[in-house]
Image (cartoon, rainbow, N blue to C red):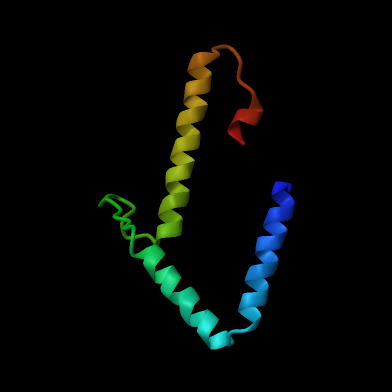
Length: 88
């Protein structure tokens, strides 16, 4: 039996089991599962110049710094070759 066929059979069994339950029960179980998942990890962002920004903006600014670092590293690794595609 192929992996795809096994996955399809498992999906069908789960769907049939879900059809026997109420939406409220499924939603309650999903919320409990989500809570268990989220309570397993904690994100602590360090204090710094951007600490008052919302988390998505802090992450975006950090990603920009990483790209700038990567660009600098490429210029050191390959001196004399400055491609504009490295800036994107």
